[in-house]
Image (cartoon, rainbow over all chains, first blue to last red; front, side):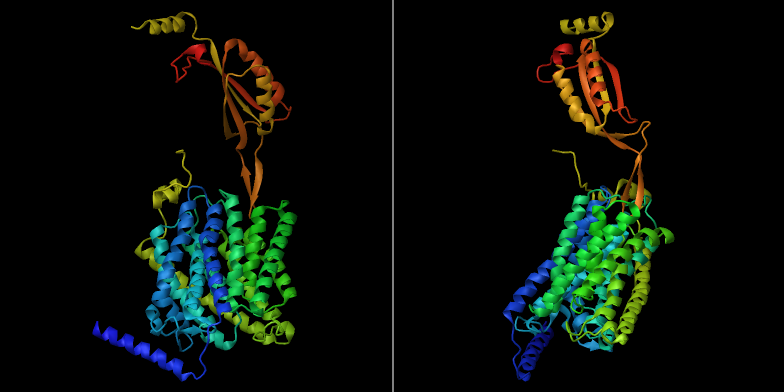
Amino acid sequence: MKQLALIFIILLSLSKFSLADNGIQPKIDTGDTAWMIVATALVMLMTVPGLALFYGGLAKRKDTLNTIAMSFISFSIVSILWVIYGYSLVFGEDILGIIGSPSKIFLSGVNPNKISGTIPEYIFIIFQLTFAAITVALVSGALIERMKFSAWVLFCILWMTLAYLPVAHWVWGGGFLAKLGALDFAGGTVVHINAGIASLIGSIMLGKRRDTSLIPHNLTMVATGTGLLWFGWFGFNAGSALAANGLSGVAFINTNTAAASAALSWMFTEWLYSKKPTLLGIASGAIAGLVAITPAAGFVNIIGAIIIGIVAGIVPYFAVIRLKPKFGYDDTLDVFGIHGVAGTIGALMTGLFADPTINEAGKGAFFGNPYQFLIQLLAVAVTIVYVSIISFFVFLIIKLLLGLRVDRNDELIGLDESQHGEKAYNLHI
Amino acid sequence: MKASMVKRLIIYTFKGGFKMKKIEAIIRPTKFDEVVQGLSEAGITCGMTITEVKGFGRQKGFVEIYRGREYEIRFIPKIKIEIVLNDELVEKAISVIIEKAKTGEVGDGKIFIFNLEDAIRIRTGQRGKEAL
């Protein structure tokens, strides 16, 4: 106890020294801070209830509570792990480009006077927390209707630690991809490719559901969830400017533009191929557009945003209707087809469309820097390879420890009843 | 043995019951309003129970598309109307239902007639035709 107190005092004094040493006192910008608090809350809204409703409505009525619970519990687990060690391992001092130092475990050294950029470090920490949480929650969509809830809880812990934290450090925490100059404004590789690849691996390792249909039990929930995701995404992308400024304005308008373009292009593609413009198609398109613009939001101009959106409404559509049946993996809610594929599209197209007059940090191939496209390709490839391998081992460990799937009978009566002892819809008045 | 029970026993044994029938009509949801209105205009106002049901007969199913994948929906939504009537009103009800629910296409539905043994009004305990 004495030692702990001593360490605490030393850390406290160290932090005071570092502030004093700086010469210029970094100042909190109240406008930036206010915006980032709101943006953080917006990103939280994406997971619960946004993603929870989006996934929950797509699930069968006997599995909808389990699906919703998966999102809720990922948010809760990540919230705790993030403040214990997650933040430190991503944003702590870089160690060999691989991982952050554990010096900020339990947020040690952080206090209300600590500043990150122009906002309190606390705000930065919780803003980043919401990103980690939604990334983990996204994966659940591929695994629902058959995964043990206990296995999912363990997955959240292991995968967040072994897959999310290193990749987030590489791209955002000063790791080797950041040093190479890979562009990822708000999480195309870190969030969406990451979650998409884990989903693909997971759906293969869990195997098919006994009934592989995707007939949504409540499309109005899906539409509500999509709306909340779209709305929350303004916090996700415009918030990634980490300030209330012109860059957040660019990210905001690009986000909305790409979402709308992709909703339309998915709808027209579907209208052409399967004869009906479905609401689920429009919603799926909007999500694909939001995913694809995520890495590009603060780098491209409005034409770039429209083109990225259009492509994001077409390619994932074919990934979902052609690729999935061809290979036969049961990615229940098309997390790979939408997040993996659109995330890759976005990451690569950022390397083409990054406009230095929008953000001098990024100059794409169409603006005279073809090298950027190669860096993007490398970042995508590294992420895919690393996350595939790690996800495989994470699922393998869970399979050995707990087993991944519920048994046949539990799957047939539904996971709401078998895992939680609850039903979403009851006759009692 | 109570007198009322004796009376009922006589009715069941010698008079062929209370002479009531239950009509179960499976109809198109699009014809539901017309059928209900037609029945009430024909003076059949003793009440009814309706249920949203799904089923199939000769009518083929249809296709729904979710995320580009086609699903053959074999069970088609219909509405089931249940009415309990005195025997003498049954033919009238049948003709109203046929008149209002018919389109001439496959899938118009069916009407089933059941002999009804008894009916009881829970509030008063009245039985048979008095309960309708």
